Image 1 (cartoon, each protein chain N blue to C red):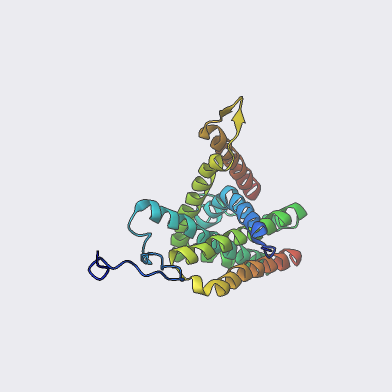
Image 2: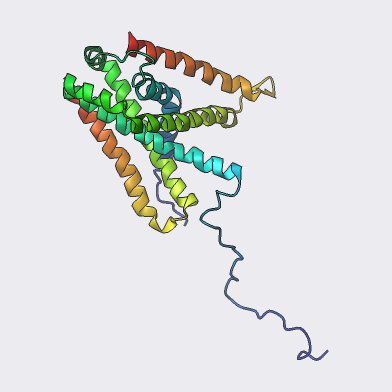
Length: 142
Length: 119
């Protein structure tokens, strides 16, 4: 066969061919609930950081005396603060639940060759969470 | 020879994980009490004297220090990777790293200072 009529073969090159990598949209996580849930879970950390800042402000108010503490409590009563606290609580609860439910994946405990069911590993976390929460509430309210 | 630079990723991951545990167990009750229950009058807010009594105890100070500091490293890790993957801003890698962990260190410093100087 005449080489000039045959299909041209890809030329040999010493360079590595370019990979086919389609560009992923910046909004890839908006399309599917699974992806959105992942991003929301990661963003819960922003509310964790906001909680720490609020706590540091509270500690500063305590250090500055009773009037500063009263002002701090008053500021927490503003509608903005209530809305922010409500949103923060939802996000942090989302973090807590996803974190506890990941525990069985992180530690696969085997008993007599059988893997312990997820619930057996996750449940103690919830019990401990309840105990710790009641203890903190009791100490603060006593 | 393929020599890798020693990485601090393991330490940062440990801090992320520890902060995740502390945040999961402790932060919800704190937000519920101080963010909703006290401001909305569901429960009586603790007096200044009572909170000062608590904060003067070394155990409580250590508790508050850990509650403030370690979750910030949890935030730094998650926020860093959210910016990497979510917004694909890998080219700002070093800036983001510095701002996230710098912020966590700053918060740790402020917490340590406030709790140390709490009369």
